[in-house]
Length: 193
Image (cartoon, rainbow, N blue to C red; front, side, top):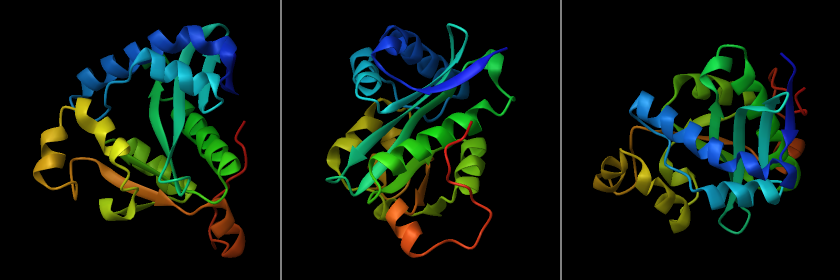
């Protein structure tokens, strides 16, 4: 194995369809979470440098992207996925750390957040400095919540007036907040490799 993690660029666009399929298959297997993504949307994230891709040679093995919300007040890490043959190697952690660094470096004033049903992702997020929060502390941008419509649990979110769902909301301070008010912990926000 020669796994490399890169900030995605236009040379990786041809992986977009495979990424969408990997996300969809994973969601079906888990039965919860992960909203469906469209190929064009993933292509746009790749082409604008808002994504992280993991490759083993020329084989796709993992992916994650960032989204900006509420006039750059928030950045979400979304679509974290690892190919089933490459799980349990620490790859999700490395991809997430890279996406976290990308978000904080591109948007240093933005708080970084995510929503997840995965206990493994919650652990990774906690190790990066995220903390569980109520949905009211996350972006209230309508477009973000509209993205949940393809999730099988969307009815739960709507039934609860977007205050709670099966996902857990997690929030990390902006890079600027951390520089002004350093955390007293072991968290390392440097680029992972």
